[in-house]
Image (cartoon, rainbow, N blue to C red; front, side, top):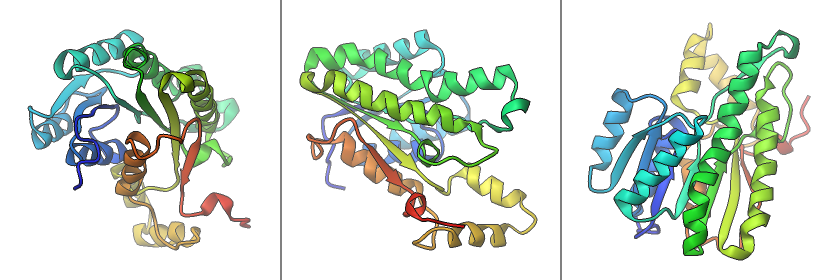
Length: 257
């Protein structure tokens, strides 16, 4: 790797699996010190912490929906590494339901994690970023923040709001050295998606069916999202702010039956 993040300190929420794990690995490979996070302190957390090593990584067990826990995460990062240059708000959860069948608990939890979680992370790091006059926040949104699929309520509502928050914060702090952008992945083959395929009557047929829907005729990889997060977080994107980048193989642009 080319050490594009050498000397940088990054927090990556939800970084023990899937897209967050790929981002944490890529950032560490590019020279960053990385604070890892999950709402579970389990074998996956221990494995990635051991992989990246104690010199360059710190694991903080915290639920992003808990504002105080996120403030502690930011404080521990600064205590350990001296600053925060990058925040990747990746932690999220799927809540897909019929609107009238949705429970009040699921509605609140979806927004607490997928929207408020990103805000909790941002307001925990913004004071230190503003003090140093620089910082990059990247929110992991979703193609659901651009297009609606029936039966997926209220997840797209939260992701639309997350993209809106990205734009608002990006403009709010642009003149003070802070950039806030988002990434909207489409169908990315994470462990969760692999479990979905495995539960289908014919896993390979479902995989092929999903790939056929995409103009590129293949599914996305977590590492491809990580590469875009790296670009946005690095000093290579100083004039990119308050915007969203779709990573969906062109699917959302296709007029499809």
